[in-house]
Image (tube, rainbow, N blue to C red):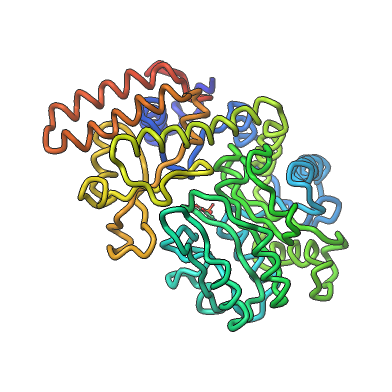
Length: 438
Ligand SMILES: Cc1ncc(COP(=O)(O)O)c(C=O)c1O
């Protein structure tokens, strides 16, 4: 365990904040679908002298000297990513998921070009064309949706019709709050018909794909995948862009062809969009990807999905309404208005009171505003890392429904909070001591 002795001595204010966060994480239940806990080895890699190094460029082609070891660690991350996702190229430098998506847009699009992505209230991410992002000033975004919110089925006929009319240059699969599998082959065939490339933003499900628990879009001919490294992949904060095509010298501008996507992407990340990569994060990404390659990770990824399906079943059996009536991945979206006649924000707050953290979320075609939407998103990656299994999904369902039942009863909520804390002690967070003191 890290003891943070230098930090404690040098900066007690920051140490105090860290200590509070450490306790919050170990004493509470994390159901935010985009969060996870990194291993002690990943944590160690983050706090290394790699943070001191400037490494603009790519392994073997840097703008600064002294790159023997940064080249080694970035190459390890690249090779591991390529092996895990079965692709030709990996850029591991995007500072996070949003910059990875933006770098792809700039690699392939001209201003005014069109991208077709999932409707945001149906599960798409902000970077897939929310009007609050700068990307919408430059590019045009059109939408596809579910045709049936009871099953999650996407309307591929409508997608084809809209694609033929709007002629997108990128058809984007991917989501932050869609609990079902997409039909990548159907999307690829629509893209082929209209001359678009295919991009999968698998930020949420990358770990499940790497472990073979969910389908790999490259197997259906997708051109590009983007991901964050800090969700199901259990790495540090970061992003990756994976692609198929010919890898050539990123210092020379290539023609804009599908074959040249790897080089177009590298040049878009650097020097097009970012400066020096964060080498300590890249070292930690290499470590996390090494962990994903181990058989234990496959067991973990399978359990993430088993837990989500079980929690979904428990919630629905006890009267909760879930968007699409279940899940195929790690995500659940609870319709709080139909379930409890409360907003997602109110239920998020009630769960906070008992030490369970989740995130409010829109439901498809939500009539409530994004800052007070009708839904709540839940996910199982973090609790599965702590070793929770099916019986714990039942216990957690009980805690959550009790919080809703006992709203307004402060003493009862506080008692449940203490119970949640006690429950958490049985499931240590990797890298965080169970005891209050460090
Ligand atoms: C599908 C998807 N893409 C991109 C992102 C953005 O990632 P980041 O917050 O690391 O920029 C997210 C984050 O939640 C996401 O869910």
